[in-house]
Length: 154
Image 1: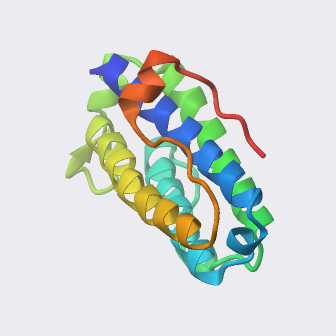
Image 2: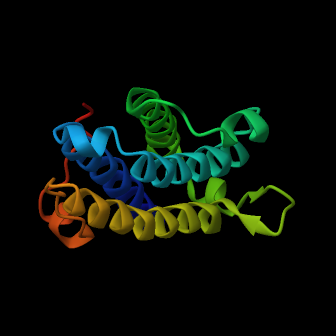
């Protein structure tokens, strides 16, 4: 299970970074309010689950505000992924069984939730990027597994 979750988190970080790079190369997309809202939802959710996993404070009211700039979203994505990748690289099987939040879920279930949740919203962002004239990167886990890469942040 740990190996699979490491792959899912690595894939999520790399594909988020690749999507953000593609958006940054398309000025219309980088300035698009609809796309910024979708991206914010992804990173808000990632940061929420990560705060439960790592136990750092999460101010939902502050985090809920959609940033005015694409650059602010980039900072939030990068921060969340750096923390998440650092945690999973050192995690043990016992860490995955630790209850999080109210205790209804364990860490592995929370990680699976955030990985699957972000995948769906990345697809929405890729569609919007295409509508705005950009080219989204390949989203598939199997593509990434053939050549696992670290995130290349814009």
